[in-house]
Length: 474
Image 1 (spheres, rainbow, N blue to C red):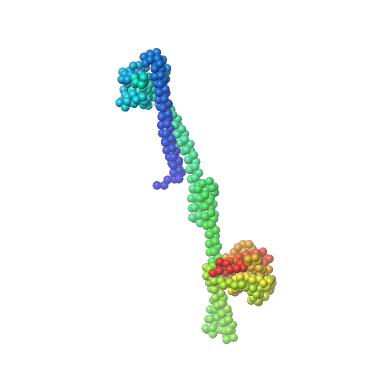
Image 2 (cartoon, one colour):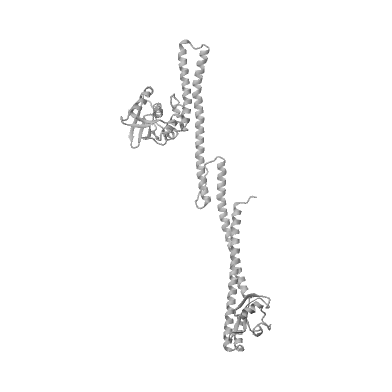
């Protein structure tokens, strides 16, 4: 059975209030009853001692003293009786019986000098009374005592009035509790409904929903946690969507890149088989087929290389390398490629600069970045710089090319990302994997790589590698 949170809170609050007030009412009622009766018995005992003290001086048969006490006590609705050692009434202001009816235990206690008090008595009197029995001794001999009685009607009226006040207070408290409980239950119920509605919205794929938070209780903290969770889900979904879009683009690019060389190779093979290619053109056709085959191999190798690097399956063999010599080798290898686009490669590094790295992998990193700079620079300059710093070595590759927007800089490290302008033939990085491999290799060396670029003013890559071996060696 489904019970709304509002009613659960309402019932729980009211139940607690009711139980608390019932217990409190019972305790207070018992306390007030005990208090009233204790006061009454103390009052009767006090009058009894006064009567016994006065008649001791005036003699027990002094009617005048007894009558004066009778008039005084009658105004307070108190009656008293004197009795002898045989419980026979010798003077009374109210009792009509000739004897005081006491059980053996009460009579024995009285004779031993104890005061007997009974707060409610119905059997031995015509009405409910409180009575007190005090013994009287003369020369250490028990000669009787005094009995004082007071109807408990007045005491009951006081107790009844107190109970009425408790009852009224209980009803008022219940009304206030009902109101406050309703307000709090409605408030919390609305907050829970907001959480439920937001959860339903997230379940439908909308991650833009947010819930107002207030860290005043657990529900507020839950709302904050929910917002944090949704933000992470939104970020993850954006990354997944971006990755999926890049994957689709990559598949489209790969399909485009594969179609041309495969069509070329197939055409050459068909021409050779059907003798449609002249002897003078065969060598050129075979060279073209070989070139297109190498393009396909590079595509497969780049993907395999990236996966090996990403999964940390590459072993680095680090050594101290003279940076100037390495940069000059890069300059020599790419000089012709740069010249085709009217670019110059300039090396700026001192002879004593040493870098601690894996020679082959560092060469791969520098070739990737330098070819990137050549690809996006025309009739410009690519500068390869090196510098030793405290604890690390810096390599900078700066060009005067077309540069990038901040949005592009954030994307270039992503796998499959490839700028529209990069669809030209590029032996390394033509499939959008070059810079992803670069970043993975630099991270594997325990270093860092950053990019500064201004649209239309060029780009500068900065690599920082530690001078000593670090834990990333594997």
